Image (spheres, rainbow, N blue to C red):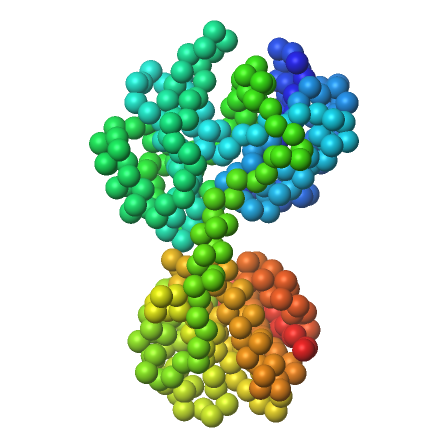
Length: 372
């Protein structure tokens, strides 16, 4: 038996080659999967003396987790499978996490929980089952996405809280649920190898055509985006704006009430609010002057992040500015705010300058521009 197993769903790039009774393991912690996967793979094939052509199957973690990471790992697995006509073994992140507790002497179900951000968690529950070649996980629920308050209610009503919990924070910058779920446990590459081996023995195969990422968040995000309504704000919306401004974000210099009131007195100032079911999810403000606009603020509620709100706000703003015969939009962003920089680049903004040490701790302000 010769297997390759890939996990890029979390912060680590994890690879394993199983060659009969031998296991060759590689992990690169807190890595960019696109930069580390192939160098690690080359090293692993070299030390194990196994090639892609030798493999009997390719195992890959299909999610949920990092959208980009999952795409990278699954693309490599599918590429190898297509090229060499190999079967694929799909592993989901919750079963990989739960596998860490499989040998615990307990009759309670295992509930694996992963922080999904914005107040949500992914979770799935398993039982331990003994087979002739060892202990396996038997799922008793499908992978789910729930608000943390709904998840804790689910545990109480279905299991009376009598479960073995295991939690992964998934490198989320949002609030941790460690106080409710325990300390975060990372995925382990040795468990990846064991799980791939067990699934191979169970003939748990799919193929490169049918395997797909497990993106539990997609439908929720799309639903949320479709519900969003973009409208121009007035001074009467000040309480909602101040609430959004009070979130104390790491990369932000919040505006105070006096500054916002003065902005509304400026005839060149425009502020737009994005709402869902009447609740403010974010706002974006600009100054307009002679066919040009400068984006002043882009703020999204912490509970609504990772759901496309900022992207939809920028698209809606650009559409509005076009109707106002605006030709150019400028903005500035902290160079360490990678998600924001990436989003603006995807929208077509280009870097046109920098202000060195503009923010605290020596962080630069990147000046960006978009021409219609």
